[in-house]
Image (tube, rainbow, N blue to C red; front, top):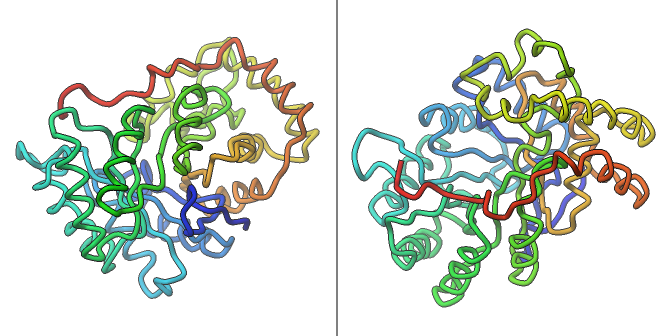
Amino acid sequence: MEFRHLGRSGLLVSEISYGNWITHGSQVEEEAATACVRAALDTGITTFDTADVYAGTKAEEVLGRALKGERREGLEIFTKVYWPTGPGRNDRGLSRKHIMESINGSLRRLQTDYVDLYQAHRYDYSTPLEETMEAFADIVHSGKAHYIGVSEWKASQIRQAHALARELRIPLVSNQPQYSMLWRVIEAEVIPTSEELGVGQIVWSPMAQGVLSGKYLPGQPPPAGSRATDEKSGAGFIASWLSDDVLTRVQRLKPLAEQAGLTMPQFAIAWVLQNPNVSSAIVGASRPEQVHDNVKAAGVKLDADLLKAIDEIVEPVTERDPAKTESPAQRP
């Protein structure tokens, strides 16, 4: 495993981090989820990402139990706050009330005294940014989180939050956006701003919801048991990538992956890690062997000619519009 600094902070994270968005507590049984976490630890992954909303708070519980007994100082545990975790009007968003209640719930479920990174899961237009950042400052100063991050925030929002974080003397060090060969909306504005401010990217869906694995074939139905056939595991997210044009171009990437000596999943993960502003790529898994396969992308260098060839294939179907980085106009 290779390690990178999270932004310009002193915190080192594994290039491949393990995330349990659509698996733990929902898609796979706890025994299998625990086996995947053990596989991650065995391969050198030390960075684990979750959120209070995943599987209705169950994902944090599963991760907490799976990591119990591990040396806490040797792990980097990340979680998030924003999406609804209960039926109440204040069980969502980034108000001081919800943030303070949510961090306590997350720590209890994760069975830890602190998280290494606490992230705003989206931007909350219903709460003054000052209120949100002051609540985060209290959490950092109380020792319940070491660093602060955001997820899917626009460049202007990151800049405003970073300025407040400096005033409040807390380290805002990361952003967690979607990023892949096919989804590059952060490249035009978010990455240049982040590089300037010392904010690193912890990217999710480097395989574009699994499309870049190459298992979805043009003109054919999705494989049985795949994400595209399971509403609980993200079928709605992957649907936009299942056009024949996209799938045909993905198949054309296979010879390039073979040229690099990589499987298609490894190729996709290695590609996002070529961006120096990416601190870590999040992978999920329903089977331990997927973890063992994915981590082989760590430390891989793709040469300039190969990167150019990738761009020539996927450019017509690549999404680059910065406006696609968005948060709900109103709390969900």
